[in-house]
Amino acid sequence: MAGGVGCTVVSLARLAPMSFADELRATALALSAPGKGILAADESTGTIGKRLASIGVENAIENRVALRELLFSAPGFEKYVSGVILFDETLRSTGKSGTSFAEMLRSRGVTPGIKVDAGTRALDASPNETFTQGLDGLAERCEEYYAMGARFAKWRAVLTIDEAKGLPSALALAENANALARYASACQSRGLVPIVEPEILMDGAHGIEVCGAVTRRVLDAVFSALRLHGVQLDGMILKPNMVTPGASAKTSANVDAEVARATVAALCDAVPPSVPGILFLSGGQSEEEATERLRLMNTTQKADRAPWTLSFSYGRALQASCLKAWGGKSENVSAAQAVFLDRCKSNSEASIRR
Ligand code: 13P
Image (cartoon, rainbow, N blue to C red; front, side):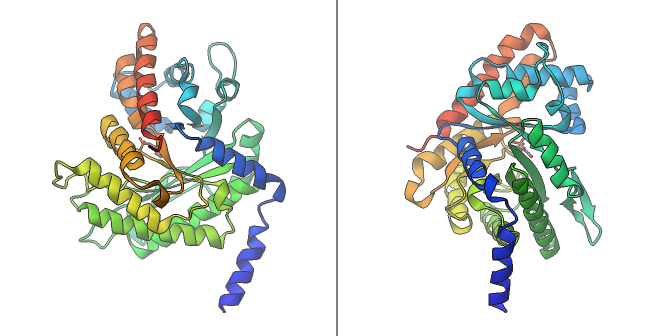
């Protein structure tokens, strides 16, 4: 029985054409280059609407494009950022100069990426949990995105901790792990490096040890599924949550150090060393928390226990104060870019192993 399963895995692994194997490895390595991380600017139209509403700006395409142009034209951000995740509309948009955003990024040595999931929906059999949509026609969309200049992709699966309800359920674990693996395999077959993002939400009053245990279970399920689908592990990026106490749990004064320790411990248990980079999501941590915890991981945790690059793939933790400084006004663009660059630089420094 075990031999049969092993044979299946070997034959599936051949689905990733050899022609892309080297390119996938090179792209994944470039994305996780020391001192660099990813800017997640792939908010869907609905999500960016919430961010714009928080500064009193209308969710119109001109404002969405203006915000993205502010970020992508920030002088020197390529020193800190290896790649940017775009939403479909942004990949198809051009800046004021008439150059496409993808081209604008590539000309600065920043790799464009693309969010390819189509958001989450409640699981019928477990309505407090979700699965992620977007597998239909995915390989063909990846082909189009590759032709448009994208070289990596992102798919976000969402898991919830609720100890009283026994969540995450076995169903949510299996469903989300399998979808992430199908997505990753479709991307690799078309030359895109998959960012595999199983996000465990911070909501709840659970302690950090509960998050650690759930993170291990989720990552175990995800890597089993990735292997089953023949995913090339050195041609992908993992984008996990940090291991934190629940957002409404009481925390100690030492919480940042505890998060750094618990996160590296869980990753060491669950992530194969062939994965080149682990680039965290910020998930509702403040900008300062996200930076400090990353810095502590890279300075206080033993490097020989952590063979991958530990860096950032932040959305809110790179953009929150920049968004406020901009306020939708063209006269604030330079000041807002300075705030954004400051966040990029701090996270770049935090991602260097010392
Ligand atoms: P946050 O850093 O705001 O959590 O966003 C990262 C992301 O890409 C979520 O999918």
